[in-house]
Image (tube, rainbow, N blue to C red; front, top):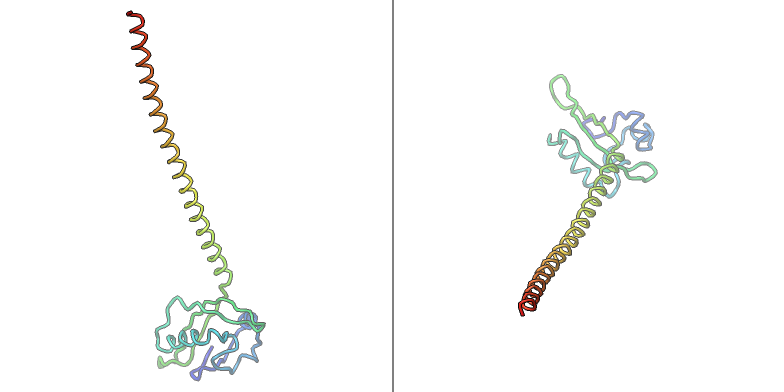
Length: 165
């Protein structure tokens, strides 16, 4: 949870375990938080500005966070405004889910799809080549059949002439 000053006021044990910092290390801190990778601070700041403007996507943000050991990981961040009895925003509650497994599965699925597309293209090329070869063989067979028929007809005429003489 964040208060109106942007300070973290609460973190749960699961979040602490996910990022590798203790509750005491996180409570009272302000953005940019320790779990924001330096290279992603700008993107995360833009996402948080959308929240403040009330333009946060209802399905959340996919961002990258950083564990205390430096490891980067993908997260889904859902943020809800906390409101007092007068409907004024009194802070924000966030739900952060590690989606590393899902991202790996998506990447594996993409890779499989690309491999399948490559194989289909390869097989299609092979079939096209085989079809072209068969068409050539069919044309050659027809040519030979006609040639054979011509030879047969010529032989029949020759035999007919020989028998007639």
